[in-house]
Image (cartoon, rainbow, N blue to C red; front, side, top):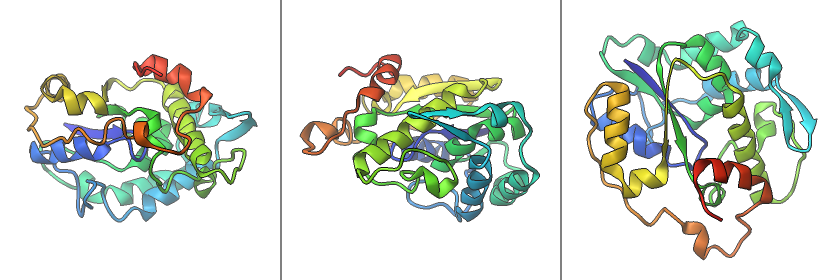
Length: 238
């Protein structure tokens, strides 16, 4: 069984990465404290190759037709295979990887690995935009957008872009979704659901409640109108 996690940076993906590691899933090496497979440079470069195939239409709309309909660029394939070499070369029965930038190239990852298992990891966007992440500025990965000096808006646009990309990607054979908040407050249910999906028993790790709802004590802007349709879809009240 091979698995990867699809979720934006600061969406709590470290929780599921640590869970998988604690459950005997080999997540490659070396890993950082967030459970990301290192070094990340080849993944970043692969995302830049991918980003050059996405066309910005304006008004936070992107044309993904080239990445959805076409085959992955050979340079992308080479970079991903090199980045994942410890995972791909492992003979461990259960293996996988986690790094948030996988989300930035999800359609081509799904084409390269059509038979693996994908966990879609979601978190309330109001909490997601609280902290900075390398994917905040999409132009770093050759993705055009309406540039802004507003840091929170830049993060929000990145969240929206990644959400749109995930929704535009044809569903792989094996995909399962989970919310970070449910992992915190309903961990047993989430582990049972994902364990059935993966076909393994998942270990329970410590989950602190304080990361949930941090936006409630935030003095900055953390809510944007363009969040609303996706928040409705994901079950977040506003």
